[in-house]
Length: 143
Image 1 (cartoon, rainbow, N blue to C red):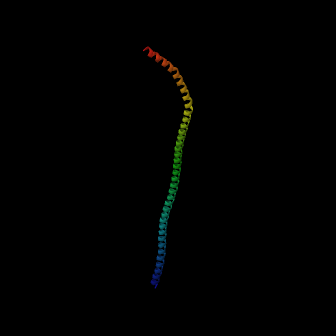
Image 2: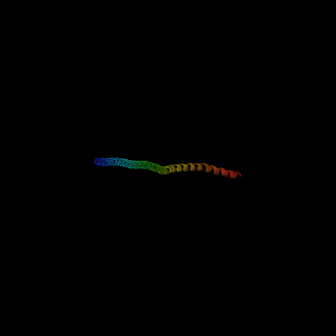
Image 3: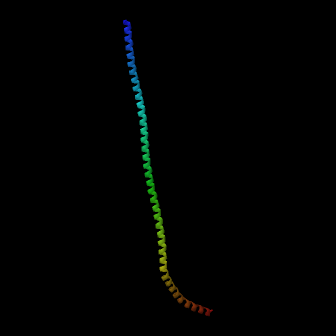
């Protein structure tokens, strides 16, 4: 009987030990699996978060850069257009004013100059014609 008791005790102890070891092993395995899964999940989440953050930053920077570029280009184009229009308008105004001023000056100068020239020509012709006629007359007579 002693053997039987010992066998029973050994069996019971064996079962208990196996159960304990099983529990410990299962716990360890579960812990390891959870740790591994945790690490993988954290890595994945980290990667996703980093990707999202990078995407957001790139989008923001893109938007800012595009806005800046558009603003700069807008400013440059407006400046160029204003400069061109300014130049054209100034040129047109100068041309118009030049034409008007020249016309006015010519008109103003025309009358007195024509009058002066007329007077001078008439005087010259008066002076020259009788002398020429007399000269011509004498020349004809001599011939």
